Amino acid sequence: MAALMLAMALAALDSTVVSTAVPQIVGDLGGFSVFSWLFSGYLLAVTVTLPVYGKLSDTFGRKPVLVVGAAVFLAGSLLCAVAWNMGALIAFRIVQGLGGGALQGTVQTLAADLYPLAERPKIQSRLSTVWAVCAVAGPGLGGVLAAYADWRWIFLINLPIGAAALWLIVRHLHEPERETARHARVDWAGALAVFACGGVLLTALVQGGVAWPWLSAPSLALFGAGLALVAVVVAVERRAAQPIIPGWVWRRRTIAAVNLALGALGLLMVAPAVFLPTYAQSVLGLGAVAAGFVLSVWTLSWPVSAALSQHVYRRIGFRDTALIGIGLATLILLAFPFLPYPGAWWQPTLLMLLLGGALGLFQLPLIVGVQSTVGWSERGTATASVLFCRQTGQTLGASLFGAIANGVLAARLGGAGDLDSVTRALDTGTAPEATRRAIADAVHAVYLGAAGAAALAFVVLLLVAPRRFPVLPE
Image (cartoon, rainbow, N blue to C red; front, top):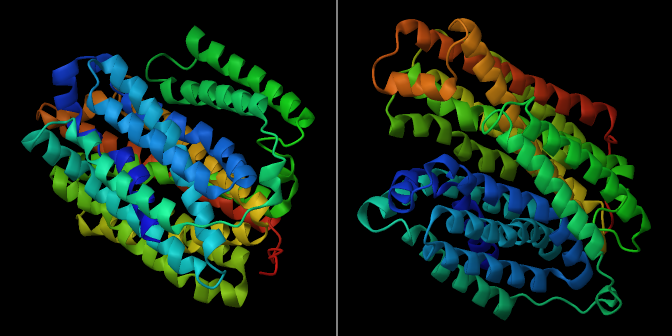
């Protein structure tokens, strides 16, 4: 368990720790115009490798995939620490992400392999706690290291943590030898097609509306290429003996419903994670630390609710527990636009505390439920499938809600400005009161969109998921 928590900490920290060190990195290496790829490149690599590592872990076992993934991640960390310009740092962040996909997916799969159904909520809540602590502590740790040491220590600090995790995994993780590993055939053509397709489509979503307009030639070309690659993936996977993304992932009602529901979860999570700090600082007038606290409270209630969810789903089932959670989340998200203007800090804080509790009741029963409906040889693929959909939902949400926020701002301010330029004007004290109201309206619109995503997840679970998940005997 200690090894799994350390491995999860590696993947979680590197999603957030770089953010506060960007000024120091840019000041040292240059490349301000492309620094956003420090985050996008890592996210893309993690997302598109999840299905590949899931299938490999079902084929060769969890241990070799986790060891190789951790080694690649640590190699990427060391390379990032010695990067000589922004281009090299972005390339090495992508190498990190190639290893991070193995860490994220395989750790979640091992949690189901090593512990019986009765203990999985407790184990998954521990992993959720690790992720939550890293999400809160990561930006602060990055800022401290950049200010008082050097930004390169952000990556060097991964080495002792990763070495400890690797030592524990090699020493204490023992898997039985399985027949599938002896006669394995790896679908390398499918892996390459999935990687290319996911990379092109996610790049189009990440960069669209940021690096170029949505209807520009680069955006249309990327989406066109991505759709063509989707057809290639389908053709390759239909012919493969052991496909990377097997058809049963979408043919089974339980897994298909959870994939769609967790995709909607990734979508709605963007609203508070990206836009609430801006709201707290620009509308409520809070400082950066206080704004971070308003957001971070949902990481306190989420793992607690997840750990307690077992007492609910043992009585009423996985689906109905998740329906209660996402139904409550929908109501909480709908309540946000009704907050008074400018309001007090405790009002959005209370909503975030309640939202974390609702989403803990929603997410963990679905993950545990899906893992309990498949055997060992399919568990890695099933787990990677739901994590891939959640990650893809987050990428789509960042693009969609960014467009919504900028559209509302443009309408309120007479067609001028976007969220970034408006918040910079507020920081310098040059923006009028009307601008603050426009930001409040923009964030309210984003939360309404998030409520729509939550409602979509509710409908999918209600209409597609079976009332009782077909849990396999242990």
